[in-house]
Length: 154
Length: 249
Image (cartoon, rainbow over all chains, first blue to last red; front, side, top):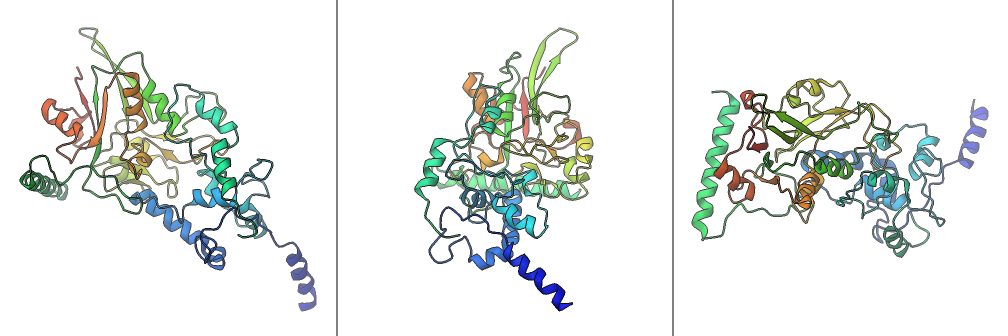
């Protein structure tokens, strides 16, 4: 059995997911919003706790907000392309496809970074929402993201 | 006296006590003025958000509040074609007096009841009321049974039939949703800001809608309600709605 299992493990290692790098550091010490090892293991608990606090209590801090995860981890590539959750390049999909854990976050949440200029803007144009949805990110957002880009960390 | 009645009595007593304390501080200085809520602070029952709508000022040919709401909250059909099953967070209702032929229109949305029937019937506690009186659906817990839609006397809730994942704001196929009183605007650290419908109505120059804190006696909405009164739709149900109407005929 051991002999049979071993090659499988070795092979699995070579196929281990390589999620895209985040675009910025939360701080120098923990890198991500919590220590990276802890985030890899417990990110779902943080997100779930935050979701209940936000919806039921109106607490809208950003540290453990899913929106912020997406803004940083699924930022547009150099060519401006942003992966959607159904694509294997998406930050969440890389691992979740590998471990066959289906997530339904993105049936209600956007899988792409938010255009911060989008909210609180009212337009008389009926199709405003649809137009915005089909466009890529605004130049302002791209500028902010590119200014904060540092290399080689997650 | 039911527990609800006791609570209401206590609440009124406390509100009055606070109002008296506010007046005694100094002229023009009140304890419970509206402050922006910091992002890390939970909403509290010191506020109760509500809306007042003047039916006389609501223009019958205008539906800017509906458009603004649906743009703000991303309520658009998945395939960009309008269907009967599309979600309606707010809609215009036409009232005709058969005797006189007088026609009025009013915007109709979730009335943010103090005693919401939708919350009573929800089997998963997904339909809930925040401390500050905003009635919401927690889509993380919603199983799409639609009991709340049947319980709501105002027909305020909608079911999401179609997939919405291609939208800017996907909204969860198979769940129920309704007006949130733009809770994200209320919670804004620079706020509380008006809901999108109220801003749109003001921008159009109709000024038929007011948003504010019903528990703050100094707010515009409370003053207006005190001076002119405001009707609840289906007040016979005793739901104590947060949305009030004036000049309904």
